[in-house]
Image (cartoon, rainbow, N blue to C red; front, side, top):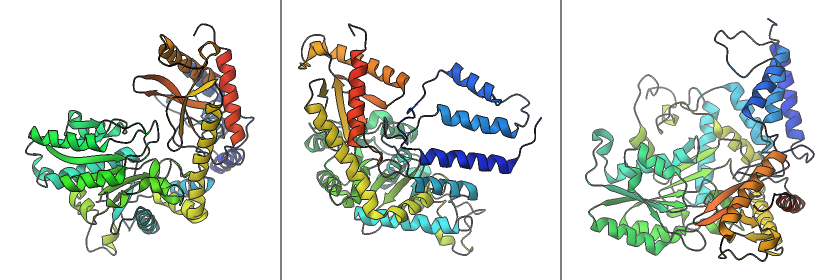
Length: 490
């Protein structure tokens, strides 16, 4: 058994991560090296640190541990790569990475001022800054592990508003019904189930041609629910849907929520960062009238995973709804006890995600964060223009913001007639095959998405500030090459 030289390990890992960040825009490296589970297991075994944790695990020596880190870096997806277009995040800002390193090294919890004095103040300031950008005259909030958890918290707040006794008794007279668009995030249904409200009681409202919620259909659905003696209590508005990046009409939805006296939550996990841009913030008009807002900084502006803020317009609600009053932790006679945040959420211990958000915002400023958003929109517009001008491709949906959805069209189907017999199933198969070829080649990475009854379409997301129009053109050329190489007929 070789001894672990901790200093050598720290310096070795640090050097490797520094090299990774410095070479983030190296286009000669693949985005991913596709490997089977067996290949990955063999690679770690050859490094001297197999993936399994043995029944009586012995300490691993320095060389094998560093070799294992090399394998992690070799086989992981490089989301920093300029040709990574697969998710609604990409290209983590190195400043945010540094914030993660510092927070991990200090290894504390965001629960109390006593344990996290600096981070408590940072979180309050970042939340205040976000609330100001959203136009909230009053506010409270905190960072949560992801937009899904923010949506869950919003539903719980809305349930309390509809029936305060439900926190104590668990009983709610009548059937509480929530409303969201048919293109909203799937976390809403899961949250309804987890809270015991029932996923069947989440009404999916149709969307219009642009992917935004149909306000007339929403109002009709609310009135129909009341006629059935149900109790509408919550509207979820989406600002930047997962597939199309569509924005629900927030001002109109706020009118409906006010008229029917319902909680309005805005799931702005993706799109709320438009508020950093003077050019793009119009998409969020009306957000100031929402009761709550989810806003993920790890999506559009480059914070590392996860960095998700949850804002509430009315101060005091979080403690009233989520407070448990654990007297071993939240003693009112401690200095600065009023700054403790651990009793404002279902969680207790939380990561100090506010640190990387604070560092990133300080380093880049509103102008830098806004420029990143605008660059993503500009690149999407460039991609859309290329696709529209080339019959080798066809747009699958109109672009509203950053997401470009399209098909590669084989020569015998040009120009594309989607309604022709057999065309839609064939495009579906082609898109799946193209994704597989891209994944195996590793030079770029795109996802594909369903579009209702339409066939799967490739989704291009240009969120990395290192991505250029030339990268977009290169990837379209790659896709055409992969398509030409597919066996016929597909």
